Image (cartoon, rainbow, N blue to C red; front, side, top):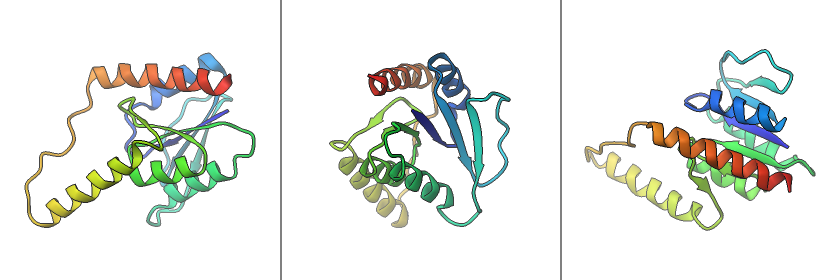
Length: 151
């Protein structure tokens, strides 16, 4: 089993490490710049080029080439979540919301509508601030995803 984190703006890296250590699961941080990680044998870092979507491409390709290894991807990027789901990975948002085959279509449609509204000059508030409840929900969802994948 392996956890891949789309790390550039991920607010739950430390929480992921703690859950991963408890279950002895490898974690790979993927970013286009150096991000500090704990010195631990289960944690590694992949630095990709700074080209557009390089981290997303690496994560999606790694999910697709996973073989018999279960992969959990942590990302807030809806289009990356879709690619990873299609490759057979489990996907969690940092808020603990799982992306599924049943929910991803609606999420993509909502994303497109919001982009059109912003392009038309609408002033939208953006996502809610990351809260303590989101962190707690994420910890529970990640633990459940790992336990489910290990069965």
